Length: 319
Image 1 (cartoon, helix red, strand yellow):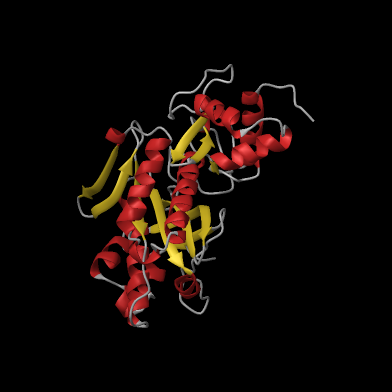
Image 2: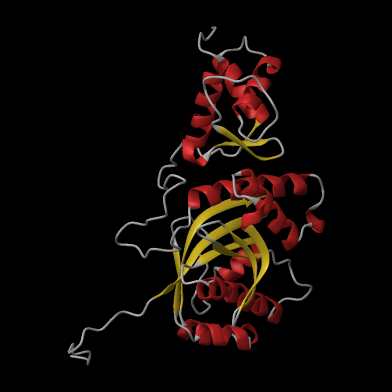
């Protein structure tokens, strides 16, 4: 059956439907296939140029009344521009993140919709590299550069991105991005050690230290991105260890306290971690998780928890 609507209308409808189903970013071939489901008479040669014309940062294509609702976030990957839609449970791209009133507010000004879209693109690129037999060559630097390219594809100017940002008393931060409101990001891509035991606890200490670095490096908090394999996730999720126990599901929280850090194995407690942990409590909320074969690419927003204020004259002794 022939659909009487313009091709651009079918493309936008498909893009919106894929986004609602969480299938974003999407490939050109997926767009074309879904448009052809709506109208089998449209061939690839007539659909692809219209997609280009609807994409704000792609090559030239015929203009349409649909404007430029699409972004190319990586080679062959597209997404709706953040300002064109609002993902259920998140906020539009031009609004700061506001959690429900019964939850702590994390990372003022951070937009998890936009960053989540960037991480979807990173996940797709990592999966493609693994499928091409390059898994053993992947590094944390490749992960970081993939994120940088995705952020640029989603509209962050290259001049608003910095790497290895040094902060007094904190050290170097992997990435900082944003114009009026900047976000600190620490990334980790730990590989399996040649021997286990102490090596695992040392990795644990390094992972926890990243949470403190972004939270203490900026009063607004920051973001942690980790790409971990199944074996390490099992270790991090063991409930027999002292807290914190890792949470990998979006919407879940982790808490880091000086007491929990003090209870870590000796090989996990570097002097720098102990020093950072003495500065107070942290809370982290998982907002993105992408499975990539045996790997999981997970992101948390992190912020320091302010000590509760005691009113003058209030009796704080045990009753």
